[in-house]
Structures are given as C-alpha cells and as structure tokens.
Image 1: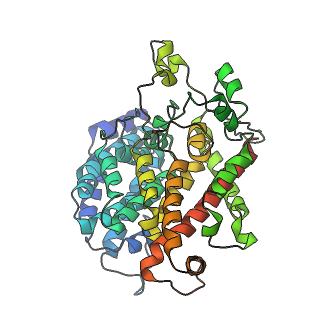
Image 2: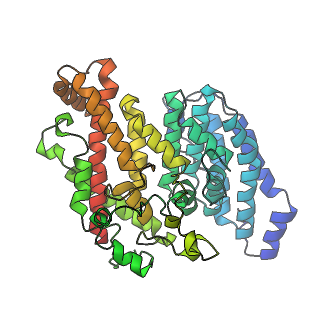
Image 3: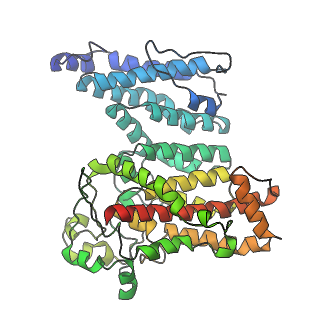
Amino acid sequence: MVMASLPSDTFAHSVACHSDLCSMLASRLNSLFAAIPPDIDPNDLDEMQVNWGLDSPAWSESSQFPGCRQIAAFLAWLDYCDQLVRESHPIIGTALASSVRSEFLDRSLGPALLEASTASKVLITAFISKCLKQISAPALLTEFLYWLVGENRDPELPGVSTCPIREHLLENCFHEQDEISLETLRLFEVLLEKPNEHVLHCLVLTYLITRSYYDNCASDSLIGSWSDEEDERERHRDSPTLDFSPGSSPVSRTLAPSNINRVLNSFLFLLPQHLHSTNDPDESGYEQYVQDADRQYQACIARCACFAWPSEATFPEPAEYDDSGSSDSRPEADHGRQFYEGPFLRMLFTRLVRLPYQPYEINLQLTGLVSRLAMLPHPYLHEYLLNPLLPVLSEANSLFSTLQLVSSELVTQIPTMKNYKHLLYGTRQKLLGDGSDVLEEENSLLESVVVLEEFCKELAAIAFVKYHHSS
C-alpha cells in the first residue's frame, strides 16, 4: 500500500501496465470466494463485520458458524483491495478496480449468479449485497455498479436487455421461491441506498426524461388541475438545475404544485374508509411519517446535489430529443410511440399489483423500494410517482393507477369475509406486535390492507415534505 501510493506517475504506470500486481490481487479474491461453503445462512453473512490488517474478528463460540472463517478471509481481502484502490496512485487504483471486475466479477461472481442452483441463488445474491455495502472506494464501487446495471445509458425496448446480470436479477424478482425474490429486492435496495447517478439513470430515469408518459392531448382543465405553472413552464421551455447548496432556497413548481392538498388526498383516500384498519386519529393521518420523511429527504438532497438534475418537468427541446431539430421530433408529436417505463419500474408495478396475495415481508420490501425512489428530487420521477392528478396516457402504467388496481381488488375481496372489520383491527395489532394471530389463510389479504393503508400515508408524507422544501 505504501509503494502503491507513491506520487510518481512513471512508477504507477509501470506497476499498472508492466507488473502482475493488480491481476494477482484480484485473482486472490477468486480463490477465497471459491473456498466459501455453499450452505451459509445469508443472515449470518449480513451480520459479519470484517476489516483487513490487525482488526481480526473477535471469535466466540456463539458467533461462529460453519464457513465463517472462509467468509471472513474473503471480506478482509476485499476490504484490503478497496482500501488499496482508495489510497493508491489513481493510475494503480483504476487498474486494480478494472482487474477486480475482469478477474473476479466477470470470471467468478457473474457465472456463480447466473448458473447458481435454486438453493444457492439466495446466498449469491446476499453475497453481492454484502460486497456492495463494504466497498467505498469510488473507482471500485463504479466497477461493481456498472457490472450490475450495464454500461448502456439508452432506454431499452421491452424484452430486450443489454446487461445479463441486471436481466437475471430482475427475473429473480419473480422467482417461484419467495426467499430468492426477497433477497433480490434487498439487493436493489442496497443499489438505491448508495445512490449513484448512472444506476438511477439506467434503472429509471432514462425511461422518464422524454416525459412520454404525459398525455398532452388531455383537456386544458385536466392539465390545469395539475399545476397552474405548467403553461408558463412550457412557454419558457427552460429547465434550470436545482440549487441545493447551503443556504439556498430551491423553488420547483413540479415538486411543489399549487394543488398539493388534492395530491395528498388522492393518496389518503385511495383506500375506502370502511377498509381502514384503525379509527384512531393519531394513526389515521400521514403526520406520523412526516418527521422521518423530512430527515430522509434532507439526506437524499445532500447525496444527489452533485447530479445537476433539472428542477422542473418540461418537454425537452427538439434538439435535446433529436439531432435533426425537427419539430416532429418532440416526444409529444410522436403519437405512435408507446410509453415504456422500463424493466425495473415494470417489475415494481407488476409485483405491487400482486400485493394482496404476497407475503408480508415481500410487500414491505417492495413498498420500501418505491418509497426510496419517490424520495429522489428528480422532477420527472417525482411527477410520475407522486402526482396522481397528472394526465397520463391511458395505456401507460403509473404508480397511482397500479395502487388503484390493488385498492379495487381489496374492495372486492375483504368485505366477503365475515366480521372483516374485527379481523382488520386484529391484523394491524398483530403486525404492530400487540395482538393475537388471525386465521392463517386470511393473513396475506388482510395484511396487504394494512400495508397499502400505511404506504399511502408514507407517499403523502413524502409529497408533503418535498412540497415544503421546494416551495
């Protein structure tokens, strides 16, 4: 590490290009990874905290499990490579990060994920999440993230993928084994926790920045109901960047529409009153989520400040959409083009529709992912996820239309249960850890009511907090 951090460009170039150092360091990850037993409990893996050097694990009889030493050896070496990339000369750090990708990710971890048996998929997916959590060196983290989501920043067509790893992970979100789907959703949460501009662009934003979900043929009254400033924005055709520097006062009419109360009520009244699981005023409103949402949003603003995202959602100029500059190149002029939300959002919406019939743990993980996306201060993502009054093309999926489908299903199914109000109350108490179990066959349906009810309050709180910060 001392030699790799020497400031000499000539020495660094010699080490990176004319020695085996980088490939040997990366290859050792392969051998240590191969030594890990395949039957490790993912929960044990997640709880391990291992550093390289003198900080060795404090082993005890209670903390040991089969394979713990092999995992510790791998994580310690990964931590050493991460620190070496961070501390070494940039030429060496970049070369080592590239070697880790080619020698370990492409040669070992990728095949392990793609070819894993059903029993091993959970462990391999949890292993990727653990690696992402441990890595902090920007160059190495970038290689991991590009390996996961691909290099291509252009939107893909439905059914077409340019990144096998990402495609495989999205398929695993629909695996017949709930454990695999749950662990994969957790991996995507780790991806969104970092947040990285390239990851967010490839997963979500590249499909929204043309704003082709917007129904520009909607009546003036409908468009006007969204925001009084929409016409003004269209006339000016500008898209200033958000200024989140200390002491600044960002103003965005997309994030702070004039009809915020109608936006909030759309979420709060999505589920009919007779299906609410509580009548307690302290539990019925969204205020209980505001404080936590405010804290998370401030942290999110700080993490995303360097992305230079626009502050307003407007249709791009013709030159932005097509180099020809033709007026017909505007997305709203292309009437034959259908909106595609991308495979990641489609996966989330598809699983949300199944909310009434999925395990509670998956529903919590799923709604948590959507909440994390909704928290991002990007105007196109914000209006697409958090503005139910937005005129959206009839054939286009949206978060609110998806939640409406879930609500309709619950309105049909729940009242057929005998004494359903009592069951709903009991289910809520059980989920809060204070109540007896309800009938097992009714758990999924009843729990989904509580999940949807609380999820709508959380979305309303996020919309309110973003309104408060941007007005």
